[in-house]
Amino acid sequence: MKRACYPGSFDPPTYGHLDIITRASSVFDELIIAIMKNPNKRNAFTEEERVRMLQEITRDLPNVKVVVGHGLTVEFAKSIGAQVLIRGIRAVMDYEFELQQATANMFLDETIETVFFVARPRYSFLSSSVSKEIALNNGDLTKFIPEAIINEVEEELNPQKKDRQRIPVGKKPTEKG
Image (tube, rainbow, N blue to C red; front, side, top):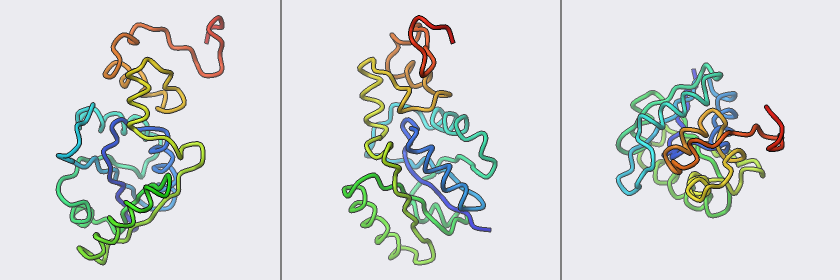
């Protein structure tokens, strides 16, 4: 059985993350999404909130599990029996960083491979940081964050949106939906 680990902060999960998760879950027998603790990052969402959001958006993918990880990613992957680390690449900048990380991981454990998934063009600009900035400034998140978790993201990042009526994508404000 081929088990892969997709590590990240997922703060919050985006359509770009979901696309990588969906694609990786179709390639591997089991995909473990690992919310890795990073003391250098200040997260908007707790680990528990991110676990819940990821579980919600992946509930239709039976071979996907969500966990919280600690320590070096490559050591965590080995501890859960993963043979592969999944990484998403949006641009050259990502590639340079991810290549450096993958090479370091090879030195730490040459049995763990890194597989890169190139972002679909429609998600190549998308990041959790971009999504947070849009939410903080009262923007429309429907093209960035999966619908199932938009309300939670808005409530955390922009409480004034909490009472706003959500208009389904593709509808005009005057249409009911």
